[in-house]
Length: 348
Image 1 (tube, one colour):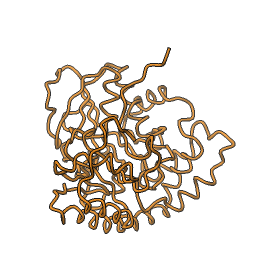
Image 2 (cartoon, rainbow, N blue to C red; image 1 turned 45 degrees about the horizontal axis):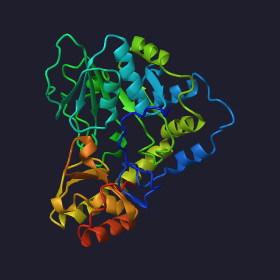
Image 3 (tube, rainbow, N blue to C red; image 1 turned 60 degrees about the vertical axis):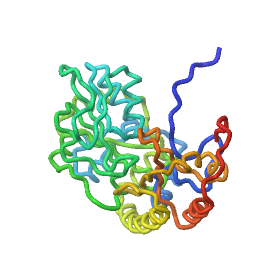
């Protein structure tokens, strides 16, 4: 008997057709990989287990953020933490899970997997659906968010029992700033996944900073974690993330990305397309009806963009910022006009 399969999830990046030659569908730092992080990953000793308690790594991350090591929670990836955190809440009384209207799908996927009530909100407002007032509230937010690349409101966590701020794209913010105060950040969970910023998304590894005084929750999450959530390469990536060399490289990369982003947005504004505002190294465009079937045909030619329908934003594409050489390929495709639609059964 064949094994049952869950609902398919949509992600950018390589697919059944292989690695796209010009991949605008992910938000990885196109200036990468970061040389110092890449060297650390290549030199990682994969012949031995990492320290099962990751004491040195926890110390590095704690010093990097100026917090006590007891507040550092390691994770196999940001997605792994999202599912583990949701499992913790489901096992300890449940919660009404609140997610941004346009957001990474794993927040909602984890809530649905555990049968938790799911609601959406927009721009830091209250949830759009009625909630049982007796249920505690777990609210997810991302700053800058995906797919829109916009910052959250300063009041985004008002009224939430537990708040988790996904900071995957904070190091890739090219304009604006985080509106949350230091006091608010100290009272919510902060989730970091540096592989995007370092241009090494194939190396999995993430961590969270627990709120001050959340030791009991940290222990509960540790009890739900398998042994060795990070391999040697993940450890090397996160240790390199804490080093000044990576910070200097990232500062230079942001300047380059800002220039590339302005050029890439101009490709669409010159054609009269609407480009949505974004503070990050990616942005969305509103797609004219004649073009909305273009992505499968372009994918077959090695050009991949992300349809934003899976983010709850139909009629839009999300594009990561790529170098001028890839932008030239995109420009040529746009100037050729809408490609003919492929048969409906064609998939990459």
